[in-house]
Length: 223
Image (cartoon, rainbow, N blue to C red; front, side, top):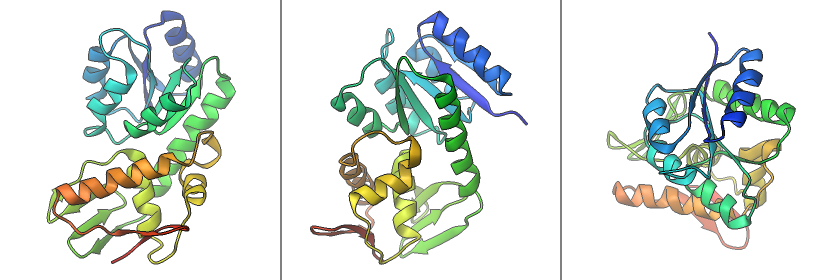
């Protein structure tokens, strides 16, 4: 069964180029030219989303925030904006990768494949319970007393890394390398934002904070 890719970009030439490239690689491609259309097509549960930032009506950051609670698939930003603040905001909104235009189609294809491989590997791991917190690694869901937490993809990947290695301390750079892998070209300071988001989700659900800060070193998971 072919993987489904949702391309969201208001430039017709970019959409046509990506559609042609991805179709040749065996993907099923759907496309949206603005935010509202992207929200509608995201409901069809694509396997990966390629999302431009500069769009009419809703920009890519707004779209990502709006769909992240409902869509667990990887979201890759494709944009001409390469400022550090733009990258941090994109990851904080729930994005998984950030690719600056103009980009190499070969590199884009490699990054897409890397994200999909990570998805496939994650399905082989089962469920673990930590007090009132249940982590279902196969479904990529975290729940507190039956209620699901709203976490971005990278939030979950960080939680997964820490919870599968209980008691082991990871510094920011190591977390970034393990979670983002070879496709990461950002700054490991984004780890602090993701940790903050995970802790906020625990707090809102009335759960204990299972991530401990080891000052001057990094973070570890505690039962």
